[in-house]
Image (cartoon, rainbow, N blue to C red):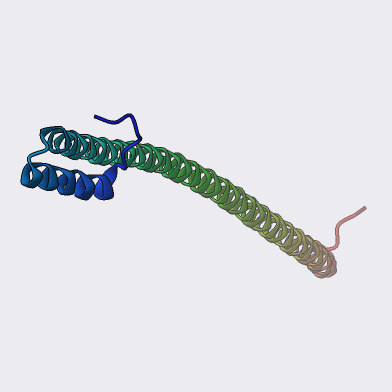
Length: 164
């Protein structure tokens, strides 16, 4: 067996098979054994490369799944954040609408109160004018009655004069 470095992988496998075949054909057991060893070594190297590739693929898959999980968590966090912002915006819109409604209602109540006050003043003015007309009419009637009473007294005195 020689101490020279043997090729690995598919080339080493082919070289190992060739050495084994030549060794068996020529009756050189050492060469045949070296070929079998090289073939086995090439198989081990190929298996090791395959396992390393599978391990790397599993590692990449695990990283990908970890990234997906992180992305999902971030999406969920952002979704909750957006929902919270929407709730806050809706609450602010509701608050503004309630303030506007309260302001409108207060203005309406003030307008109604002003109208009622104006009607009350108009009614008071009308009642005052009516009272003044009634007082003037009563005074006029009193004056007429007083005048009629004097005329009646004057007629009575003319019919039956009394000594005064």
